[in-house]
Image 1 (cartoon, rainbow, N blue to C red):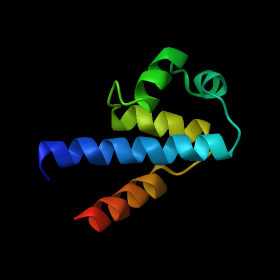
Image 2 (image 1 turned 90 degrees about the horizontal axis):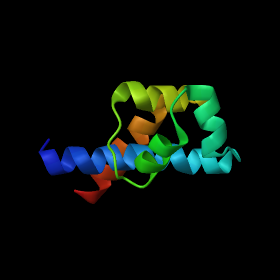
Image 3 (image 1 turned 135 degrees about the horizontal axis):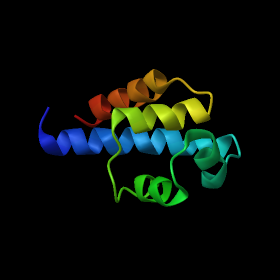
Image 4 (image 1 turned 45 degrees about the horizontal axis):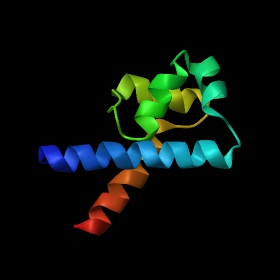
Length: 83
């Protein structure tokens, strides 16, 4: 995987997580409370101004009672469809 592909993949995982967050009616404030990640950091991540580590993505997914693996699979499928 090339660096640009990895960046796109990371953004796709973030997009999938934050789309689910919105569907669940959760706010960045609530995710911040549950995960220990600041609202500012969540906003940077959501708008692709920062690329999160796997650890950070796991904290976000756990705060949503979601399985990070599901969102990684979603991103992988979308990336495969693009190529």
